Length: 123
Image 1 (cartoon, one colour):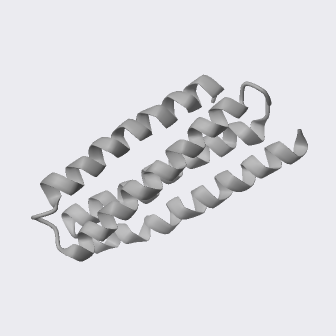
Image 2 (cartoon, rainbow, N blue to C red; image 1 turned 180 degrees about the horizontal axis):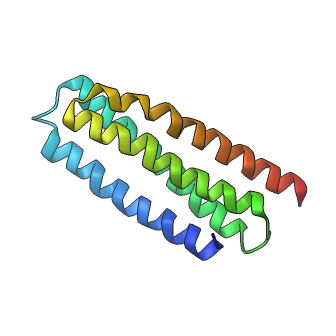
Image 3 (tube, rainbow, N blue to C red; image 1 turned 90 degrees about the vertical axis):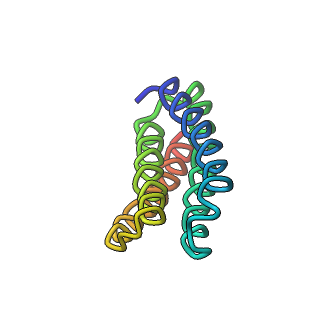
């Protein structure tokens, strides 16, 4: 994955973060329980944080050519899809088994940040 693609992914996830946040605040506020709305908001919040991370990684990628950096971006993308995505579907559908996917996304986030640290240290 190239820096340009990671930047594109970051910008795309930021865009959808805004849209999903607005959707949750306006369309879902009256239809979800407070607990499920909090789950949904957690998905949006983590999507924002890690989309910003993707933008950061993409920019660093123009200075550092590293497989660790590329994998860092890939893992953050996977984390957003698995962690935030599972929380969105869980909160809207109520299907509790989807909560089993969430920790896999969390581990992807952690691994992505570790890989970023390795890329920087190896520079």
